[in-house]
Length: 154
Image 1: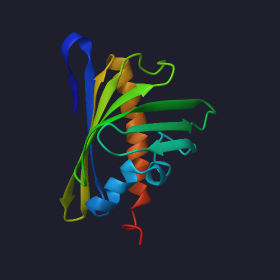
Image 2: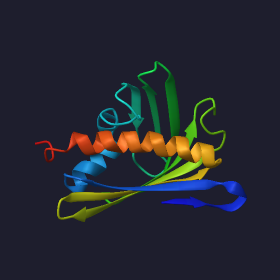
Image 3: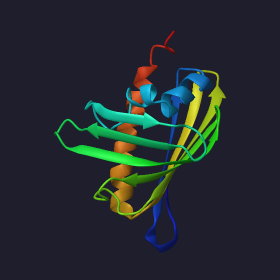
Image 4: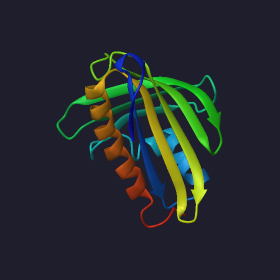
């Protein structure tokens, strides 16, 4: 689902089902160890993953794409309700991908097959920025889904 907001600012929402309990998925999206396993749109490595998942805490992630380019984002945790909700500010280092600060909200809900994630990235600069982020987050969420494809880790 794609929505346009005021002044052309746009958002994207992606929904996925992950074969793991909500608490396991929550840890995968809020801990440095978890983030390092799935962040980034392709099979390139996460180079830096830092997370202090509490209201007012900060995070920073740097990853390398398969084309060799590196990208870094950081922000503040605006709200954390374990294990069902994470809201954080988002800013790209250098601002090339998006010159503005945007917002990421991740809602987790238990479903029979594990966890349903509703991932929303809002306050994106324009339609091109939204398309780029949709492609990036689709790749990252594919990796998160694959991480638990055989059922959650022991």
